[in-house]
Image (cartoon, rainbow over all chains, first blue to last red; front, side, top):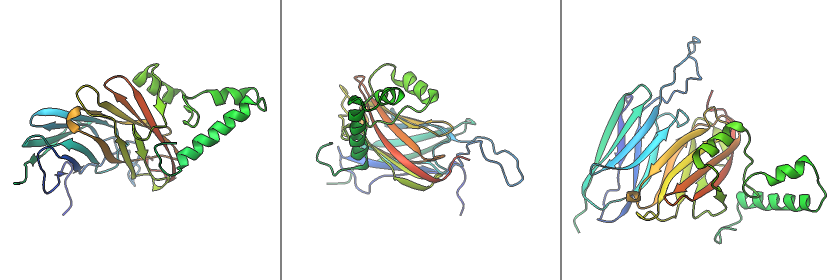
Length: 112
Length: 171
C-alpha cells in the first residue's frame, strides 16, 4: 500500500534501560518538492517541503530541526537521546503549507 | 593528524595545502596566488566560493573563528562519490560534552553550490546526551559540504567533505 503524505514512523530500540543513550530513527512520507521541477506537461511543481521538526520528550522540547527542500524525499532523520524517564517521545513535522504531522513513541524501560 | 586515525583524504588535502603554502612562502609564487593561499581560516579548509556563502557564515557565526581539524569535536561523513544527487547520506557526529554547562547548541549543514546552500540547522539540547545525526540530502553538483557546530559557550567547529555528484538532484 502506498503511504499518504505525512505518514510517519519513529523507531526505538527494542529494550531500553533507564539512562541508556539510545538511537531514535524517524521517517515521514513527504514529496519535499523543491519548486525547480516541472511535470511531464511542463507545469511547474510548486515547492512543498517539511521546514520544521520539533522533538519533545515528556512534554519538554529537546531538539528542533530547520529544514529546506534540500532534504531528500521522504525525510529520514536519526539522533541520540538519553532515556532518563518513561515518557512519550513526540515529533511534529510542519511543512511550508502549514500542515503538521505528529507521531509519538513511548519510551518505557525493560524489566530488569 | 587526528587521534591516530588512518590517513584520510582530508589529511591529504590539508598536507597538500600546507605544501602549497610553503611554496608560496618561499617566494616562488607572488601576487594573487599568494593572497588566495592566505584566505580561509586554516590550510586545507575549503575556500569560501562566493558572496552568498560568505554571508551565510557571517550571519551565523559573525567574526568568531571557525576551527577545524578535530574530528572528535565534529565529523562529517559523506560518500566521496554520490551517483544520485537526490539521495546523499550524511552522518554528523561530535564527542563534545552534552551537559547543561557546555553542550552542542546547533549544527548547520551548508552545501556550497546548492540552490539553497544553508540546507539544514539542527538545534540541540543536553537532553540528547550525545551528538550523532543522520539524514539524506539532495545535491546539485560536485561541491564542498560544510558541517559547522556551535557550542553553548560560543565555540565554532567545522568539518568538511568534498562530494562528487554524478546525477544532479536539485533540478
